[in-house]
Length: 108
Length: 122
Image (cartoon, rainbow over all chains, first blue to last red; front, top):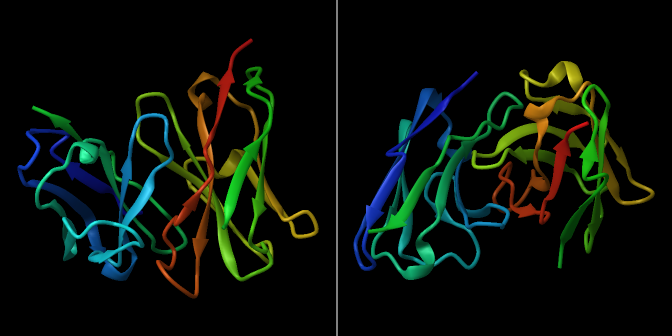
């Protein structure tokens, strides 16, 4: 069973800065099935990235995903006020859909 | 557009069975996709509970498998969750979601319900 570990737990940044979020898998993952979600308070998670690097419909191009094997990254090139939220990675494999524990991006 | 809506009791007593239904609108649940339940305890991250294929094949989180039953009712365009022997640790917001198979962001949770809070308490 694959475990996804996200770091850091909290990222304190200012609007306009670059955010780099990490997701490490306990064993190699098919990048086709690696996803990133954004969640704001009181809302359901929203799909941002699928296939490790493909943006979902309507997602701004300041969001980008990369990585392969066990190491994946979500980058927000320039933080906008609406980007301060919690981000989760998640993968599918062997009929299981585990999530990482999340990274909170907060305003510094 | 596709919408999912969870429904069910907001309060369940310890040791009883939690039962929730997800009603899908704007989309046929008979299309070959997976339909999932995810929960999120207060202040914590999401936890995948299980998924059901439109034909009824089920896949459960190993940590919850002994207590989870999912079913699908294509005539009502709904799918359901039962979680038995609940305890306080099962208190959470419960979400239903779609995981498409053959298009778009395959196997992601691309569309979610708004979630329903379930409290386990006597």
